[in-house]
Image 1 (tube, rainbow, N blue to C red):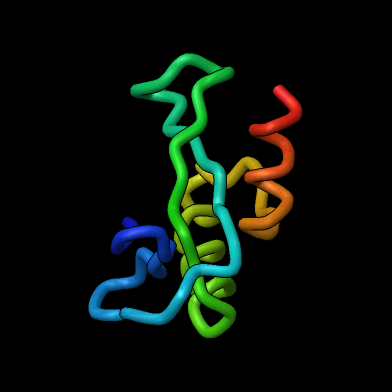
Image 2 (image 1 turned 90 degrees about the horizontal axis):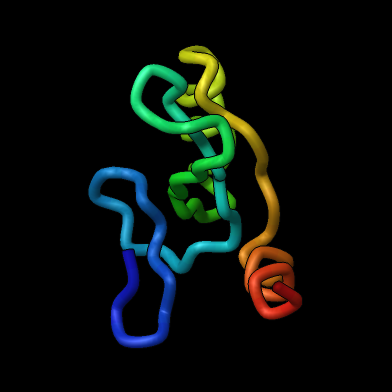
Length: 74
């Protein structure tokens, strides 16, 4: 979720700026190459990562900066 140009953490009720991108995929719903994303602040990265990982959905955790750089590189 973003407000204007500021990326906001996806944790319920959190309004802190996002620092991390958690890329995930539900294999029952998505093709293997599909990536959904949640954003996380430093405080919620571990909690959100654990939630996705316990379900076998977590594919990658990268900084928001690296995610944008990777997208720009194609």
